[in-house]
Structures are given as C-alpha cells and as structure tokens.
Image 1 (cartoon, rainbow, N blue to C red):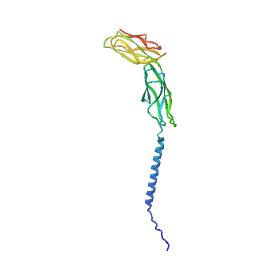
Image 2 (cartoon, helix red, strand yellow):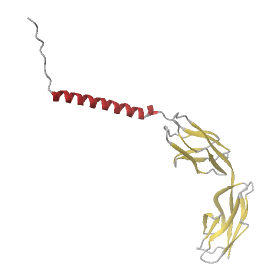
Image 3 (cartoon, helix red, strand yellow):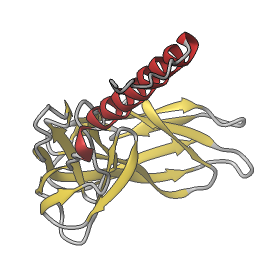
Image 4 (cartoon, helix red, strand yellow):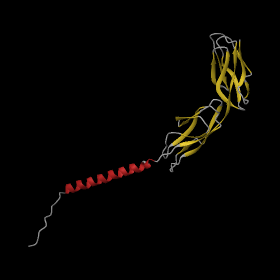
Length: 210
C-alpha cells in the first residue's frame, strides 16, 4: 500500500496574522536601526582656543551660547567643558572683562561640521585698558548728580569726593564725561572731562556743583 501523507490545513486568517506579525517585527527592527544611526554613534567634540595679552593677576570670563561660563586666569589655551555634536552651533563671547584690560573674541562663532573635529581656533586677544575718574565738590547734602561717559554707563553720585567709572577704555580711545541728570538743588559742571586715553588711568576730571 502507498503511504498517505497527512496534510494539515491552516486557516487563511492565521496565515494573514502570521504575515502581519512578521511585518511588524521587521518594521520595529528598522526603527531601532534608524534610531541608532541617527545618534551618529555618540560622537562629540569640544570648543576652545587661546587667550593672549591678559593682564597678570586678572581673569576674563567667557561664555558659550550665553551660558557655560568659563573663567580664564592665564594666557594660553582654553576649552569649554560642554561637549558638542555634529550640527550644533557655538558662539563664544566675553561676559566679564579683566581688571586693567579689554578682551575681544575672533572666530568665536561657528557650527560643528560632519567630522566633529575639535574647535581650537578661537582667539581671545586682550589689551591694557584704563579707568576715568575724578572728584565732585559743592554737591548739596541729600542730593545726587548723575554722570555718564561717552553718553553711556550712568554713574549716580550722592556725596562729594572721589568717583570712578567702572568702564575701562583702551589707549587712544576718546572719552567725554558729562552730567546726564542735575541734582535737585543747584547745578553741576564738568571740567577736564574730554580727552584721549593715555597709557594710564585718567584721574583729573572735576565736577563742580553750585
């Protein structure tokens, strides 16, 4: 006798469900693969450069994208702690100038390229800077006078004596001290308030009130 092979019939709906499960599994696998590829393998890099001309004993504060503050206390190389990935932008600025100096940033803006190479070409160049100061006399008690330098950085003075603007200027910069708000009693005038910054602090501005 010939052997008869038993054939098991599978309902059509079960085959369809099996195919659907297989397709779902394949799609899930592709999703995971694409997600992993999108991460770029987690490649990161850093942003930095060099500082020069920083006055001895002073510090300059740098920021990257308005945050990630880095305080630099010596000339030489610097690197921000934050790590960047491909496509991210960076913008390095000076957030606080050093005492006795003024620093500017070159090549401080950019975008991390597809090689994720370390950024090292940012330069922070500092030059000596000096203050403008003087004295106030004749100011009536319980009143104040407001001075400004180069039409900015108002300084409110409420007593006779020494004053100094926090703004520092580099050699050759022009300065002009003026009264922006007179006191409630009397009137103040400025003498020796206009000039060009020498290689030293200006200390002879005189504000006389009557």
